[in-house]
Length: 222
Image 1: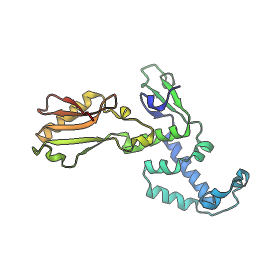
Image 2: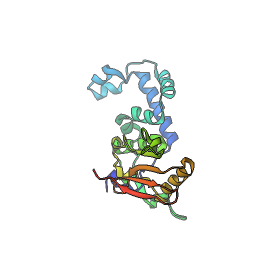
Image 3: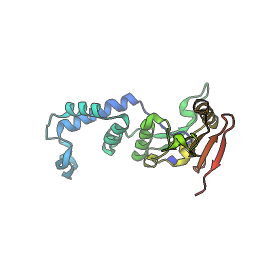
Image 4: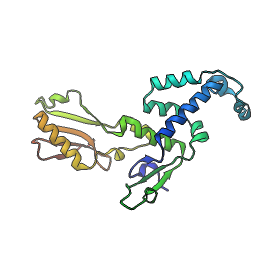
């Protein structure tokens, strides 16, 4: 069994509706019977914790607050706790593999990578982070790069390391799609376009097109 860094396609075996419903039910239960706060955390006896003697009746109010104030990412980051995983979701796992071909079953095309809480949570967060799409932004001053009105874009990979990922896993691919993107941007901008990103080895590079026809790769040496 490999590590999550070796996943060809990071994903997770889960029904998102099941996850959302059960997390909200779990929140309702915890805030309804007092399984939150410093006093509860200070209780060392597991049996005493399980008795749920305190009845706060705040469960539904907390659910409404969570729904109103959270994105999918912050919802999972805050409430998909190790306790929830242990009690309700320990069957989840992270796997890697290709999409099944016609006539193949999905379970025949993937390999289970991990069943650990942190890996499962990281995979869930990665799916919800920016809707799973790469973040590309104009560099500060990038609308007038080289003082020639050239466009300089940056593929933002900040924060991904918290999800157990490496730059290698964030490569924009397939390459053909990136080239089409740069050519379309050139057609709209009318000037050379640059994109700072990482290659398949995780090394920083700049892709550029000066004429909207050919895309070149420039390696960045630190």
